[in-house]
Length: 468
Ligand code: MN
Ligand code: MN
Image 1: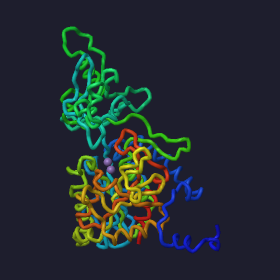
Image 2 (image 1 turned 135 degrees about the vertical axis):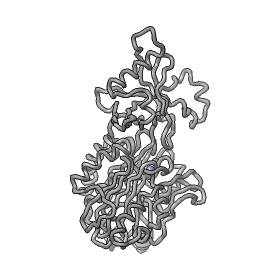
Image 3 (image 1 turned 180 degrees about the vertical axis):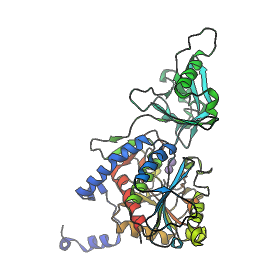
Image 4 (image 1 turned 90 degrees about the vertical axis):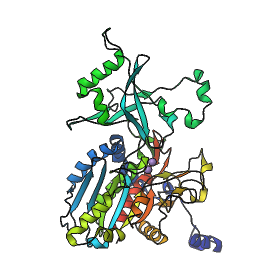
């Protein structure tokens, strides 16, 4: 329809009212292809990096190839310098020094690189009914029933008393064994089926099947456990006590896959939140920043952001102090001028469960990244509520770079809620807003994201880093 043919009402509507559109319909063929192409290496990445430590092992060579070097506190850096900080192999920051003096602030993009999973307890190995199992303590908010009767892989690291370490990955290669949590057959699940869904599988029922073959010696008890210990000693040189200084975890085994006949979606473990970290990484690499560009990848978000590698630590403020010191600029002066997009996934409307969302303020797959002014729960408790001024700036940046984006709240008022690391960054006096990729099945062993939205996280990060 040409402009002439539009009625006064149609024209007024176009001028005054919001009209969100599915980016699958509105993007050019070239942009759609760019989005789909962008997701091919992303699938490799998300299949490879299933823990925060694996992310860091992967990202350091990527950055070093791009000229990033370890940060030296107190050194005078100049525009174009590229540095990184590895915080205990679990949290990570890197920066491109901008052309503006550091006292004018930084553009920070944050994300978290840990995901919900089943961690092994410090004394995990036991035998029961002549089977060997691992006890687990789940990490983060999971619906426990989702983690039974499915292939799991063991990932992690064991640190021996002498400080030497063993990195473990079992269950990803085709010729490797996998593991699983067994579940009751429906025929005998009368009592279990009467439990609430949340208690369908209790915390102490997430036991991992790891062996069945006895050690062939009638003089010993717990033969299956002993046999597993013997295999672990042979393969990794570890004894049972070494589990006490280990971080071993069970994650869903296997690779990310396209979902749907049209291949528009990706199913993967751990989109939350490495999908945002990945977009920030590719965004900063593509950027030519005016302000010092910082990517901050935190651990422990899924358990409350505590500890030295969580966002509620001093890592970002110490970094600002270290950057400013050679110029006599206090860290707080830098932070007060800084801006942050705190990137974390948000809930997309699920056609099977639309009732938990309020449709005008919900996020949808293929409508681009979600900008969220506030998270939290109840009467906006425990949230960074982004100042309207910074919301306006971000709108302008995203629209200027033709980033497809939408707003979204995490569900209806009082339906539940949740938080992100945004509040730990904004408390440093940094203007901070939540953005992120919408997901279906968040925190499930397989989460679903749309390729268009994944690509828009990259475009948004690049635009934010490049903003004048
Ligand atoms: Mn998250
Ligand atoms: Mn999460």
